[in-house]
Image (cartoon, rainbow, N blue to C red; front, side):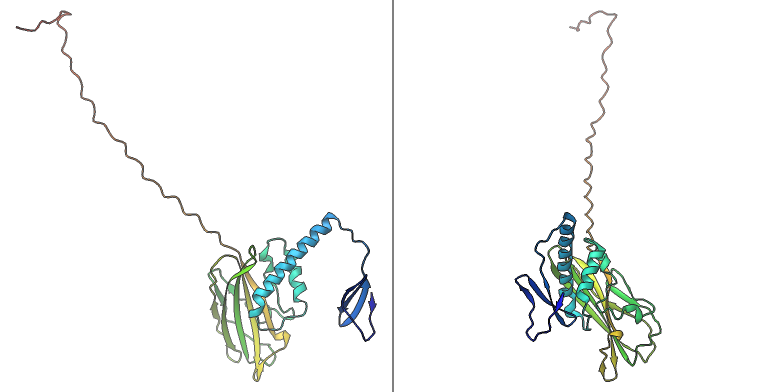
Amino acid sequence: MAILTSIITFSGKVGNLIAYKRNGKYCVRTAPETVRQTANTRRSAKWFGAASRKGALIRSAVAPDIDILCDGHVVNRLNSTIVTAGRNNHAGLKGFRFNRHAGIEKFFPGQPVFSQNGKLHIPAQKLQGYGDAVRMELKIIATRIDFTTRSVTGMDADVLHIDLEQPFAGADLSVDVPGKGTLLVTLQVRTFLKDGTSYDRKYNAADIIAVIGDQPREAPLPKSRPRKKLLLLPPELPQHTAPANNGQDQMPRE
């Protein structure tokens, strides 16, 4: 790797030279003449590409509703989380931080609990230690993503403001996002100073706190058909025969 010190800098590929920017410096390296890949490396590259596309879909679905500044490594961190979780293991996204400098547990010693009915319960607790912040904003963002069709099928949000100069007695927020797909629930925390928003990354957070997959619909039970009633025939009447007269034929009377 060489570092470009000239006034004229470029990025991209020219011949067998590849120029790029790294940590604010322009660097250049030569491209390899041949690239040999084994079956495992090709499989890994294919999976990493799929994970990158999934990460881009998640960012495009959730990022427009996030109001805090994310760190500069959020793309690589999200892709790495998806790769580590494994294929179709969307539950592995739970706990991901869009801002690596702070997490939800920093603000709430008693962790919020999200239930599958769309309710977020925050227990009563003592809130303190957020610098000069006087107010806190909570925002729950529920985004439903269909990873099969690569589409966002629904979104809902709820906002709560907390006065940090008063005791916190607990609170509830709720969202409702019906439809098909995986539900990603993100909880965002923003702190405010007396003169406006605090832009200190140590006092703002946005974490994925719940991941709920598709709930399979229960197949309706088949209706039981009424049993056919058997037609009961009347009992047969006993047949009486006249007894024979000592084995002799009886002659009709004239």
